[in-house]
Length: 494
Ligand code: UDP
Image (cartoon, rainbow, N blue to C red; front, side, top):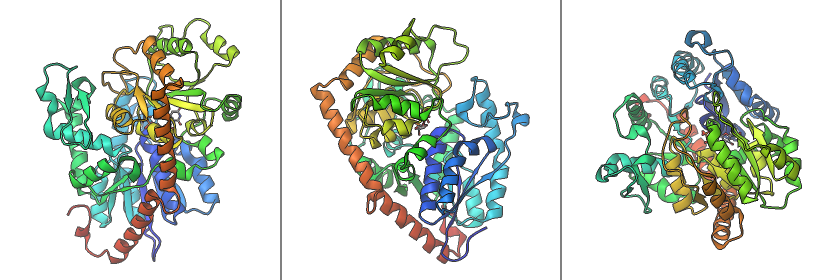
């Protein structure tokens, strides 16, 4: 029910994929920590992923809760418990999950209409929440879970279509009108940027809906990408509040970091104990996010490259099902265990906890926005290995704008279900690792820059920091809106 008086009642509707869900839960917890009554709508298995964190917050006196809705397993033919894109065990489950997600619309709408919140924060993939917000006469905010830079770069590509002026997929072109000189190849663009397929139409609907919403909440901070935040507002005409890095604010102690997102595949203490014996900045952390499953052949190349580099590592492995290729060199695991050179995690890793350990000195990342922010929070230099979604744009931000990373050299965009096109060879892995973890001049400059950005990230969310100020300003604005809200046409573009 809408809260009376000054209290704000906000409903959060996260998407069923960790890269979107994890940061939105952090956003909800952040609002609750500032006195907002926060309700998160999700399905039973997904709620288990963050119930502990919510219980923690409730015990600290925050008014936050989960509203569960049923998941249509039987109707779509998915096994019980498969309710999230990270839990799919075969590519043919993906369309079923998409269908199931679309079936949730009615239940979610009903919960929102019954509870009559003062505001909705919706994932971008639920454009229909705009209609519910309009029906209730309340503001709707959209959450993308990506960087300003990626959205601006995509806008530049869409508006100017620079890929039409090149003769081959590998020829580079400039992204027009961006604040920095950014060059890309056609191969690195998302497939749906070119043909007008169904997904492209859906993405257009999302963009139209975004523009009609009250604004966006962005997991970024002004000092990180202010040129692009300004471009987003001025050129793209969007209203936005930067609140990040959200992971830092609500997961300060070790238990919160360890519990975030899922149950770890290894004992948290085992990782930490292993790292405790290592020198500062001596271990490379390698992770490709929550969805990517690499082929056996690619894992083999990574293992060989890591071993040849001689550097220490902690590697999170998710292998493709039904891939019979050998995927680690003979005796690799034993050698790494005995020499204490490498720690392998097969499954979910307590990433936040690991990244904040002083022994970690760098990160190989697929350039998911959350992983970049989390690495950056910890002041780490990055080796970029983009695969799908907006990750090739994020790579450019890291390597060309922020200058906190080097590219391993992936050239071709793919989808999260297809894994990776082509192979990154062991020599390329070894070269990037040796550069980043060695003490050369380029590495030292990158490391210094990463440390500075890490310090800026901390400052942004502390008292008086830019992100904290945005959060407080938005809460105050919403209170004023709530008190003065009489006309429905004030919000959401009507
Ligand atoms: N994550 C984690 N442990 C893992 C894999 C991923 O904690 O083993 C978390 C990671 O910290 C991040 C999120 O899952 O918050 C992944 O989001 P990102 O945007 O980096 O990539 P995606 O999974 O969407 O590709």
